[in-house]
Length: 412
Ligand code: FAD
Image 1 (cartoon, rainbow, N blue to C red):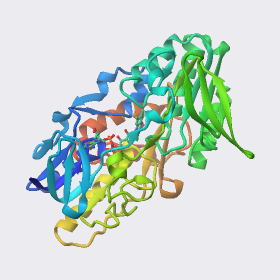
Image 2 (image 1 turned 90 degrees about the horizontal axis):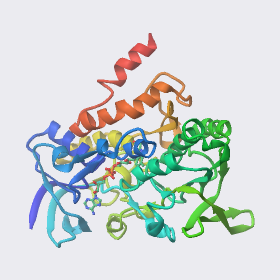
Image 3 (image 1 turned 180 degrees about the vertical axis):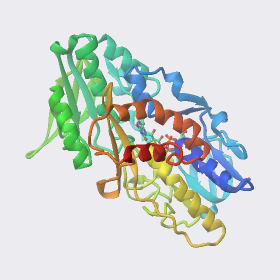
Image 4 (image 1 turned 90 degrees about the vertical axis):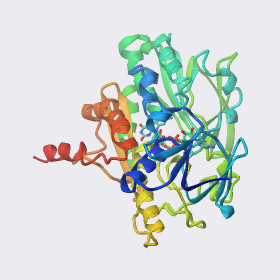
């Protein structure tokens, strides 16, 4: 049986950031990262790929190059968690023991829950930016679109980056109107299982204006359940006052945001709470029943929007509290629920939607955060990817080097 002081499950945005910060604080820690993939993806970039702004290669690095020096990489997939024995078991049956466990394996995409979707994806105008394999096909589809109905869906489950299903829609709408000229023969539709454009009312109001200005048709309480590729039909369960009815909408292209859930091995473990997510305290990120377990990122139960930006703010809380625990000190660091979803509303505009628990607005800049801005588009397309690779994954803060000087300038 292998043994490590700290085992991190998942070498994605959260796992690498936590490992890097821990080692910055204490080089002597014995940390293993269990991660099956030999590539690391900057998923927020997939929206830019789908919109034709950048090629997919720009957002892929070798996993070995992002594992911080001093951490061991175990290239394996965890299949089972046994917190009563402080052990995780890999798919290949290897047991790895820990003193402290950090769980951040991300969210699972449940493609199979939409009938016909898996078979339809990647041809006939059926696409999704939620996979690196199809994000390039999104741009191909948008570019070659000849007019008709362009549908963009949003599921009934929690998802990562709640804004991504509509960011791609605004880029598509821009392309149809400005470049390919098919706009006059096109109906762009946002079909969402939800009842509004966004979870936070202030940002929803701003997005209501964007869809109105663009003439985008909104279909609320429309939950996609099937794709019929041969007849190009999208089948929705629509919630009405009288119950649920089935509605079919013809599509000429459809961008699907699929249903998502906690990874199955988390759902099936004693560490899961309601809904299947890793059950942690929403302030300290410590597990509610197993004191030596922490979780952050998309797989955690934290009641905030699941983003890399949230993981960035969660990581120092996990690091501080874990180090306190190791030193038998009280656990005092608290996360406020900060998350950020840069809502691209067109090729030159973005609403930098930053908020915390309870939907409380939490802008990093002394500006009205509900406004569409070119500067925030530049931040999303150029500054944030750079900061991700060069600062966040290296265990460095952002604010000190970029936001604070900008803020000082803006305050003058
Ligand atoms: P991930 O980064 O997904 O990492 C999870 C890791 O765990 C992966 O490397 C995976 O291989 C590994 N893993 C999975 N299962 C196992 C297992 N059984 N054992 C071991 N390892 C396992 N965020 C933003 O902040 N801004 C945005 O604009 C934005 N846009 C997005 C657009 C799209 C299209 C997508 C898909 C995501 C977007 N996000 C955005 C969300 C962001 O990418 C995630 O919230 C973030 O990556 C979460 O980090 P994580 O470490 O929890 O999960």
